[in-house]
Length: 199
Image 1 (cartoon, rainbow, N blue to C red):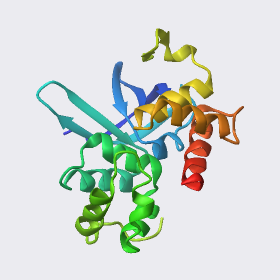
Image 2 (image 1 turned 45 degrees about the vertical axis):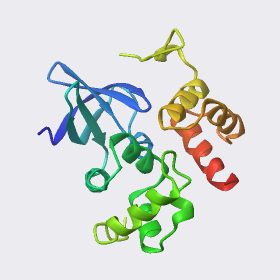
Image 3 (image 1 turned 90 degrees about the vertical axis):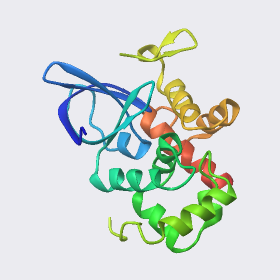
């Protein structure tokens, strides 16, 4: 099991990133809560990782903080929750916010995460009640374009679609975001907040 990587951040295109470690480029997927913590490309970074082995692929997931990885692993043990939905949960909620949703049995807030219906939200609350953390604290091709050539708004739309939002919904949220001129991470953060307020 690969539990941690330390190296140079080469690519940062949500939800994908690449980390060079001793000349080897590791491709990882990460939740938006991790992207918010990442430094600029070219910087040194340490990520806590989780490896998922499937018949057709070995998938590596990266997290800037250990509690994020622990929550990800706990979510994978819930019936019906796979890595894609777990990433969506961690992108829409911090570990503290998720713990609050479970503690307060906030089904409505959980169903705002793409891929989470009412029954799944209720199952999450039941199964995660005893597991939640204590309250504290190379470019991808898109429509014929290299992700490296996309502007921040286009990157934000692509990332939201990858997290499970419909293309029209993602585009509308990015257009309404307060940080239109910011980085893709800031636009995504504002777009997610806007979608929560609109729900």
